[in-house]
Length: 409
Image (cartoon, rainbow, N blue to C red; front, side, top):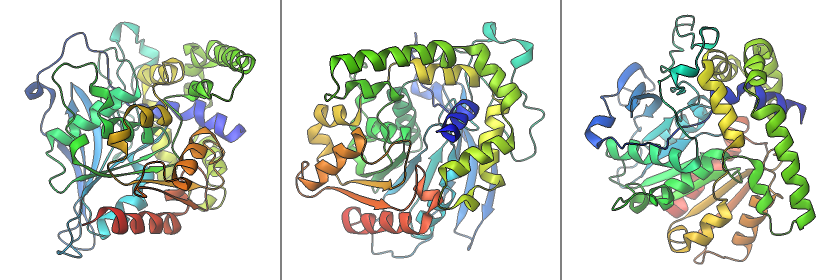
């Protein structure tokens, strides 16, 4: 628990995707600019390319990675895969997943959601002081970060879902279908994008991704934007709900809604060694996987995110948690029963344990074929909250087996 708490406070700054409550909507033609290539490297062959870039979304810099597939079987039509990271993370921890999918002939895209990783962390400039301004110039080469934009945003699962939908639409992804893969909080973003739930407040607006979904794969799915969604557990008594509500209120008042404390933690407590120790607490079976690349992917956004990072942490813990996976299934049964849905769960996950609310829901769904036609499946693998990076061989074996059996034509 100590490792998880340290990681939560220290690197939450590097996380949180944005989307906003916009008082005025911009037209599609003004939302985007041509992606700016930061670097591209050739791997294995001239047709196997990794491209890293920033993409403009509503004035914000969104960092992304794109992998050109290695052609393996021209007789099989393979969908494009979009990877959506979880709390405090970035594209970096998808490194093995991206390579595995690329080598199997899949086109792969991964994004740092707005407010996380190397993407912009918006903050109104009237609340930004010199002491906490973003320190772009001190970043080492190859660690460029998006500029913190002068705007006020409201973070939510649905707003991130809209970001992903806009990205797919702008780049015209999914000619052969789309597969969304998410980890933890990113799993909720995947479900939002797949169902089109984020579009409900827009008149005459349709989801780009939803009709193109060929499958969704969730790694250790979370219960919502934050843990306050545990209060929706129908098995809790009114007394338990009252007690837990009070606990959340106190934690928010003392820690997560305390900008001064969060700012102090990021500026004075976060170190690479602290992050290394915290991450090793999550990679219990393979602590050697916590290398400099992984640590740096948390460290630099946390240390150089400025006041935008502080605001991202504050909101993610105190904003409405959104719909749970269970509520999304109740709300969109026809959509979520129409394509293969796969769960991959680390058996030693202490953050979102498989015997928790969400894990129990999906285990019951699989055991009793709740979705019909056997379209919902689950694999339990050795590992914790990030099994695809901690135990890539077993996890990716399960992932590829599902893709071949349930998704690929």
